[in-house]
Amino acid sequence: MEKRGDRLRDVLEEEILTGVLRPGDRLEELQLAERFGVSRTPIREALFQLSAAGLIEQRPRRGTFVAEVGPKRLMEMFDVMSELEAMCARLAARRATPEDLAALRRAHDGCAAAAERGDFDGYYYENEIFHEKIREASRNGFLVEQADALQKRLKAYRRLQLRARDRLRASFEEHDAVIAAIEAGDAEAAGEAMRGHVTVQGERFADLLASLERREAKSA
Image (cartoon, one colour):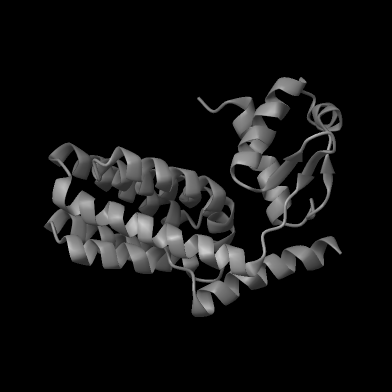
């Protein structure tokens, strides 16, 4: 069951990504608690998660502020994420058990249902499960820890990226290639397919930057 803090995180994450909350804006626990009609405990939970994701900064004796991630830093983070996830996919192709493959196939089916509905948020959550199952199938705990940590920093931007035109369809087709390679036990193909899926460059990076720019324009 989803916790109240998780729901509040999603609302605040959406407002940061759409420009309702802008870089540098201060977030006050008491004001947020009054706005959402909750105690300060779920607000603290939501802010903790947003801080772990790098969307806000909690500055000692100064307060909590919406963070700003520049294009260069964002590109660097996606570059590293693509290599970590490619390694997970390679190892999953070599190590996945029949149970792992069944769980991965169920996650893929969940993505298919959300894509068919054109449900961006639903696909976002199913996509999280799909990648999580691949990381688990890698059977490398340290790698999973590193990938999970960076995933938390990038998840909001990956969510925003899905809203680019045709990205939902393209993402699902890329999942097809990844899961086919893993099921075939082809480690190199799985790694290459995953790297291409996660890497944000060229037109895809331009699309992401355009989404961020639209966010800024809306809030200006």
